[in-house]
Length: 237
Image (cartoon, rainbow, N blue to C red):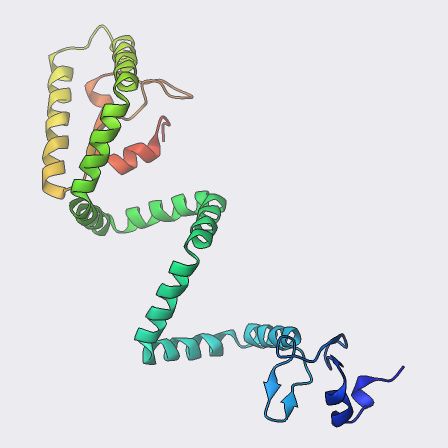
């Protein structure tokens, strides 16, 4: 058997196939498998060149990142146009990829968001307020459509909650508790107008928790952002 590496270049170029000098696999001598040059074709196939480049980029990660950043800064419009065309061309695949990634990283995303909210509560409130104002009409239309489609479910859910509140209301529930409840809802609406985000009156210990059940009394309620309440769910933490 004749080794392709031992043949002169003109003999290799004349052959219908060429052995790659890296993987030694015979491939058709076309531009699909070998990159063309001024004198013919390269002697390393495209796949091996890609693999070499990947390995080199992994060894020189910082250099590649700096070079890429500099190129993007110098060609910002071209870069934006390329990425916009790529996203448009691969919209469905990117959405599916993003959905799968979020499903795999759900716990990490939730922990990261909690950390950011705790570190920057003012920034979080401002961002939520801006987002609420930006999508106010769209949100209202969605809520209106949802309410009209789920009226029976909401009526049943509200009736069930009222029954739970009756069960969770102790015999000593009095004027102080009633006043605290009214004031809490008043504060919730006031904060919503001031901040532009939704606030909820939350039972600190849920009325129907998984491990413990609280009471519908004045010292078991608080006013918190809706996103925090929805994230808390029916847990006591």
